[in-house]
Figure 1 (spheres, each protein chain N blue to C red):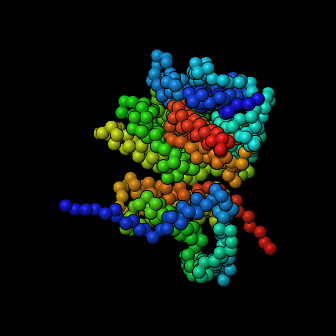
Figure 2: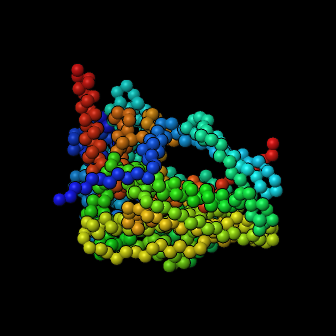
Figure 3: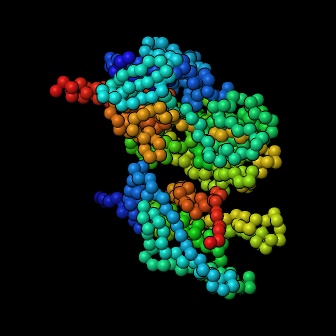
Length: 406
Length: 187
């Protein structure tokens, strides 16, 4: 089978890319291993909602959330429906049930192998998503037998865990949401906190994303950032898709115990870092700078959240004593490009790209955090990223055409 | 009418060289592998001398410009001769030195001119631990406090951020706040 561009993945990014390619009359196909947006339906916990408000769900071609609750937050099923409707309305050329098994360079572009057909394409866009493989520290395997260990993609709701104490590792959006609902379920939750990003749900009467959008904070470009590697590896903002703030203070008010970063296990003893005070100070300072930026945009000043409370906390917990019955590893998630047989990886196995343009001509990636700008991390960033990458891809096709014509 | 020139910030830290190393890492990560070394020789009683001369890094053997020698002892209150500071005080020396180097480097990168930086370090310790008098008391510090007084061309918030960032990037802070595997053998 032959096409000009193969897009791998029919999530919002793959479909945004498809729409921009179609607008340029570039022949393409979108290969999807499951159904359109299927991972939204199958991978996440029951209570998950989008962190961004509904009005901020905008895709190329003027497509956007059309419901009657622009300030609400979509459920995972709602996101899947919206993306599915978008695929239909765009008449995107999606082949579902087609798993890409390998992409290799070929004489004229790429060969894309799947569990169905093999495709030849001039260009390939990797849109298989940033959330493929949970990242768990190496010492997770040293948990004593009898302590249940789950990653967020395995977690559905509190009933999935045994009664008794839970250690939630990580204070990203995932960590704080799961910690909150487990504590509300009657379990004693301990949350181990490393570097984290604290933001209020609302500031000066508006959703935080209204400010980030209006003040241009999320339009900061990746290629203008001082420390892009670090920015791309920051945990997600502590947010829940609801009209309330969830942070370490709100969790502690519910009775959650906050301790330092989970540093290791020795002889059944969990060891926690003594750096809790500093990671909380860093998050509070960063939050203050963000709110300063918003105030500078808006004029005046808003009410500032209280500093993060840090109690005297233990540096170790004996995991054999039964105080902790289960551990939830909210320690991050990463993309899986193991099937990409193109030499575009650095010695640490990370995909090399500049704003989604890989060093191998004609190979692109979309849908990674801070791909081209801060907005890239959110569904709302796909439109600009896809438009930029489609323009680059079209120019590449033009250069191939003129090279073969001369 | 007055004109202002961009103030020249110089804390004596070559930030460009450090960032150059970081930029080289993706292509040659092996140059980042360092080994630090010290030899300790017993002198007499609790007095010993630790020498530091060589290390490995940037892919090859390296050398300080001279051999630095450090006397280690215990004070007279421990029935010792006080020929040098105690090992635990060297830990405070290391932490203060590491965090302060970090403050200077981060200030340089953020274009903040420092005028004076002074850290006061205290560490609490319960002797029951090292004397073996109470199995529940740990040998080491029960807590460490570092208090900075910094005079710089920056707002109080910027100075707090300097100190916070320095902790985040500090090797000794990490060594003290996180477990480290230590192997001791006899050859």
